[in-house]
Length: 203
Image (cartoon, rainbow, N blue to C red; front, side, top):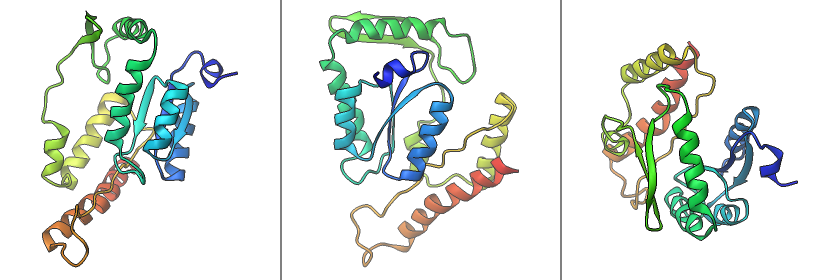
C-alpha cells in the first residue's frame, strides 16, 4: 500500500527539515489531521521524494545542510511539469478549493483555467506588506508579537501549534569580520523570535 492509499481523505505532505525533532513534531501534527507524510532532510533528498511520491503539499525550511528551501521549491515546479496529467489534477484541486466555505484563514479561489500548457488561478488579493520586506527590518518588537498572537486567538479561539522557524546567519562574513550591528540582528531574530511568541502563546 502506498502512502497515498493509506490516507485517501487527506493530502500527501512532504516535510523538508534537517532537525529530527522538529520534523517529527510536524509529521505527528499532520498525521493527526489525516494527512500522509513523507520526509526529507535536505534538497537532494527532497528531490528524490518529489519524483517518487508526487506530494500535494511541500513544507520546507529555507536553510538546509545541502541545498536550500528555494531550491526545493524550484524542484517542485520542475517535477510538476514532468508529471503526466498534472493539469487535470490542477483543475480538480482548483475546483475543490473553490468549493471550500469562506473562512478567514483561507484565500478564496474565484476562477481557474489554462493558457496553453500553463495553468492559472484567480484568487483573493491578500493585502499587506510582503513578508520579505518586513523581515528586512529585523525581528518583530515584543508588542507587535503580542498583538499578532491576540489577533489569532480572537479569530480562531485558540492556538494548537506554534512553529518557531527561525535562524539567520551572518551571510558571507566570517566570525573575525562580523559587525556588532549584524551580530545584534542575528541574536534578535534567532533568540527573540523564539522567546516572545512562546511567551504570549503560553499565557
